[in-house]
Image (tube, rainbow, N blue to C red; front, side, top):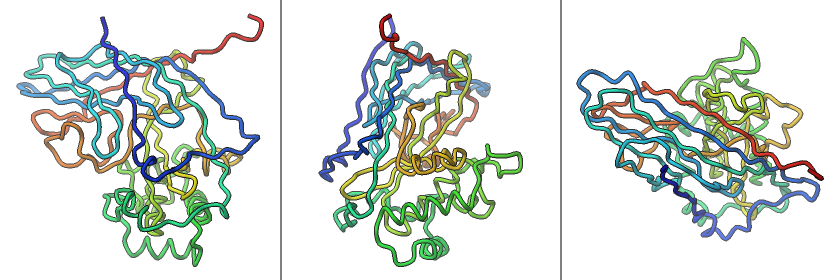
Length: 344
């Protein structure tokens, strides 16, 4: 029988800050969708004589707009663990294999309910960032995070964009608009810059675009230059056209920025860039057609990896005899659980 276990994320940071949560406009009705998902990973191309394989694989969890209804570990090496990231709180499916003689398989089945979110920000009602916030959210104000470094050029650019504005909401909107107006997501056209693969603020700035992580890295560097706490979240979109079709949907990252009196506010710059009619919505909201898996970058995993800190934890991280290994493939197949129509 598959092992079933529930993972829940405790929002300790929000509790410490005494935040009431997201504020919705009265006419902004949230949309909810429930998905049953098969999530598989195959680790292959293992070198001859490999002694030890270590695998960290994405797991879903609860947050303010996501409810994990059940989780089954259907296939995994003996002795696997469900661990939790000490700094960011998300879960991992962790496994080790000694002396592998064939590809290593992992699979989870889960049901998740996702609700759209939109915060009706009113600039005049936002509080001021204080030294208490800066202490609590020091990790999300780091200026030395690789590929999101806040150097003098970022400070200067952020000053040019925001000027003497001190309101968090107005500054965030100015930076959001700047990134959209000065960069393109790679999917917009054949001539748009491709993803850097690194999530690089400088690549996005200098090339005029890239992947979602490039665009969000630029926003984060600029926001941190203005001392606005900002963090990255990672997941995948569940597009209607992909329902019932096994494949890899790729990943989508988004940003959360902290607004006193509102809390953490979600933003998807790449969705706003590719859906200009929803620009205002994605400044402070997310649709329900996605699932969240992990937070942060420049990570020490749990348990800690043998190699250096992980720049981006996307889908999985694998080590073979202490060295990073890129030979893995992910498959997702999902079905949306729809409520019967009225009268049926």
